[in-house]
Length: 432
Image 1: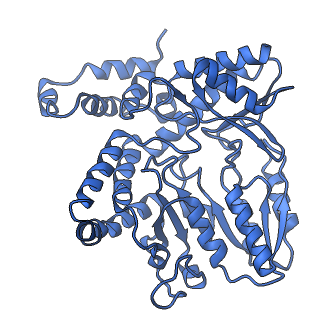
Image 2 (image 1 turned 180 degrees about the horizontal axis):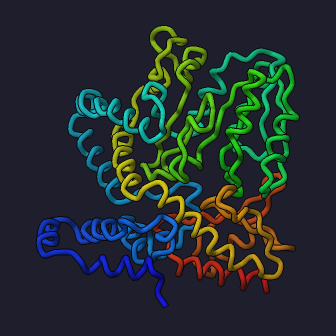
Image 3 (image 1 turned 135 degrees about the vertical axis):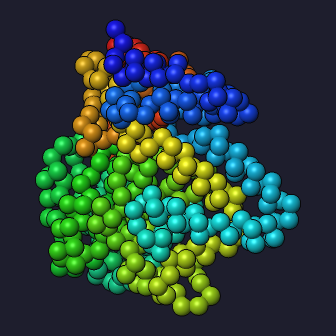
């Protein structure tokens, strides 16, 4: 029996006038259908819409993913929708008509409007947003730009991203700072436990705490704001790795009470590959050296000093605008609810399969799209290889510290039929 939301959606689908049809006849079929689906969805709650496959079918048509491979590793990098791909290609062709003219005198003029739109989505001032290539670049700009001295302590976890861990180790080797490493036991739904691990590591010498908003290995969401508030009580600065959180679930950067935040826009915003964003709280900008030298004062209070990258792919940067439009078209709440629904859809089906170990919380406060499961007695790489060989399903095997299993990351273009196939593959492998 169909749900009330499904009946409501389908009833609306047949309610368009001839005038509406004729007004969109010049647009591609997939675009017309998507516009219709969005209008049909008005008045349906994000929670009800999360399982409305008729609606998400039209979102799926915006992507050009391979029909020969089920990509469930969107946590690495996500494909961009067709509108973003087309914009990037168009800007690339435009650049090549006369690169030095069209890149620097035309396309580069779009950076300030883009900065303004990014800041609006992030909920902060446009004077706090720098546009770069990925979260590693953004975070390392701060890690290497902070004026730390020998003996200063930095608190981070062993579950942080390797690029960040290596950056801190380099500063430790080069400058004599002291790293204090926390080893989190995950998954957990005990916020007090997480906060306590960080607070217990703080000392009078702690100058910075590094917090990964959502752990990439298993999708654990950390209570960033609570940790940040405790850190600020002790005058400790807070840097947040938001590689997987921005445009994934609904929040504004100031909500986190962070001093620094960076994200990769080619993950959950669906921007072109090689696009990122750095947030620096206004009063902190003047204290950070840029990763690439500027022509004047490196300690000036201008967020643009962090964008001095030399010749850069303007065609990629400007196509970010189309990704913002696509995200706003779906809506942050709708997107978050759908992603969480997809994660729980497959994990609920395998959690009681013998030998399956769940490594990710099913609660929406502690996880969203990213899920991780292990099989007792088997290595993660074995299940990864089995799914690719037998089912053409692409996931990634994780063997990192105390997290062992496959990471599965569906996206808005993923269908429940594809997840049913994943469940079948996991079940077959676990019982073998």
